[in-house]
Length: 383
Ligand SMILES: Cc1cc2nc3c(=O)[nH]c(=O)nc-3n(C[C@H](O)[C@H](O)[C@H](O)COP(=O)(O)OP(=O)(O)OC[C@H]3O[C@@H](n4cnc5c(N)ncnc54)[C@H](O)[C@@H]3O)c2cc1C
Image 1 (spheres, protein in one colour):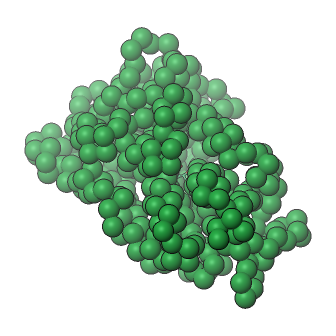
Image 2 (cartoon, helix red, strand yellow; image 1 turned 90 degrees about the horizontal axis):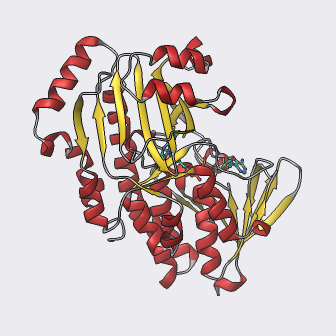
């Protein structure tokens, strides 16, 4: 039955490509339509927590991905002097999902997914403009005036999803109040395996080793969406974080202006529906979250693993219906907790910073890490 169905996937990001591989493996004909002219991951890193690696295991992609990823040993949050405020219990999430936490260069992840799917299944320069529901199919209309008729649509076109905006016009991306810069540098320090985030008045700075002497960093600074800060150059960043603990100044001095990636941090309010007639939303299109829990892409990968399981015994319609039931609550929890975590991490008033740091230093781990309990302990495959 599935062999005859043609699925159009809108968006060639992590969600769209992973879904394409899975659906192709299930016997569907797959076409990925991507708005940009070139399909490639941006020059930054990404954390694949144990839940994402577990989802990749279900999809039979984990073993190869582990070869090009770096195991993350632990993660601590410090003040700008380098004093530990608290450590995230990464072992707990590993234990629960029986696999390690990893980080990978986005370009490597993208290239892997593109190769696995097959470039001939990806159509670039195809920006979806609209679609029309036909009695048994969907007519996809693109900005270049072409159109393609498919049997089913996966909307995987990210936080600004056109598919979602057509279906739910009131669901708009919202700005979290901070802008983010990212970079990857060569940093030759032996045995540098530790990830850390530094929370301070001047902003938040995160460091994640990617292996092979590459280190990914990000910096988040509170600003208005149209504020001057959004135009910060590398020099401005070096100045902003000059008093932060080592290796932050070193990493910024190794960075290149033309390789910086910057943008506003956005999410959406949780929506109550992912399935619409012959259309299913997945990834950021369905549940874009702020990156504070490092779970946006992880949720997209979980989505695909759950959809795969549903498709083993069901047609697309029933599988999508069940998918929605299984994914709404967990992704809503991530959006809400990640927002909350961002507010705490981005505090920039001295009084609040003092209060927060004291709370983290004095309260038992059980309490400070309570918001992560569900992420650690819930088996996303359980229905
Ligand atoms: C600073 C930062 C750090 C992050 N760190 C992590 C992390 O460590 N771990 C983690 O799990 N997540 C992280 N995330 C979140 C993660 O990047 C996203 O959740 C993930 O990339 C979403 O993938 P996606 O495929 O759903 O969407 P996207 O990656 O946004 O892909 C959507 C694709 O659709 C295309 N598209 C858009 N509109 C159209 C259209 N009309 N027609 C056709 N194509 C279209 C786009 O060009 C794009 O290629 C981070 C995010 C940010 C901003």
